[in-house]
Image 1 (tube, rainbow, N blue to C red):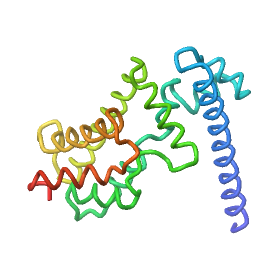
Image 2: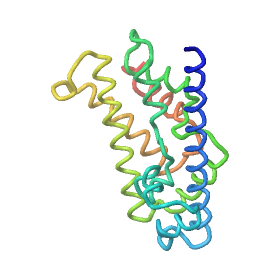
Image 3: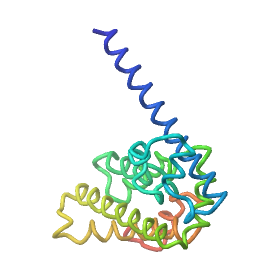
Length: 201
């Protein structure tokens, strides 16, 4: 039985590494094309040909071409850590705990992150990229509201406090990503907010 468990864990590890390699291949192909000919002139078909993957493989990893500029799990590590923070912590304390646990990074730390951020900054004025960013920010704020509601023991549909929390966090994420300073840590934004909002301390 112990051998079976080890074999299963090894197989899962191999699958995850294969997925990571495929993501990296697609990402590298896309970034090369974005740099060579621009975002709007680059098509998913061109990315698939450069990466030597099928269209269905591309869409298994990235919902859209725009998603490549934000990473495959944008913000989810922070939100997962926020949800998993100790139950006795209030929303702001739990968020602080999550940011400490994740080093305040919205994106997976990897060698390609700096390159992706540079490309994202260059292309943010393109309508589809800008709109995709807004969708991500809104989704982040929505999930933050749901987690805050669970921590407060209230329903966000009837209690404004979780929605207010989510809106404030979404505002910080939007400023952090879309207007600039995205190279800094999100912890700096939460610290600044707590400094000017005594109730959040």
